[in-house]
Image (cartoon, rainbow, N blue to C red; front, side):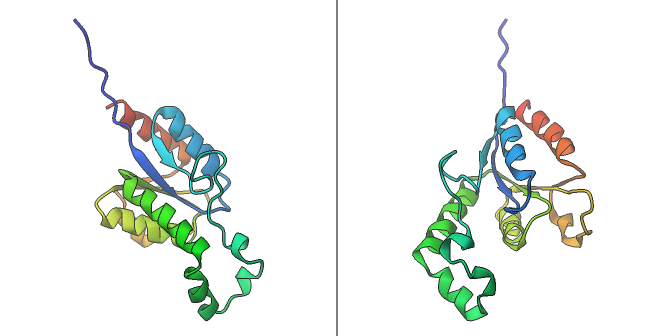
Length: 155
């Protein structure tokens, strides 16, 4: 008698912040489990450079609202947006890793609104957020999330 091993590999869009030091090890851990993960820091693999405002202009933190709107139309911003949004569309599941920035929360909202499963991974010291109630799953730690994602792959 033979047994078929069934795996439920997910394509995960991991939304977070450039400043979140837990993002790179989480990407690696999810890949080790067997999931595909979009890494906004290295979107084309290990050599790819993710979008960063600081690569467009050194004074980006001092822009007026009008300058921000103007720079959103730059070729560099268009390329970064198109690449990240294509990855969101490619994904089968979204994860919001706290702490994270404003873009990550917009991404998480789009992922949930488009019908994808949305997981939220909290961090110690997080300020409570009411609207994370819309997530399918809320985890108190990365370890708890990884336990869950191991179960998902073995279903």
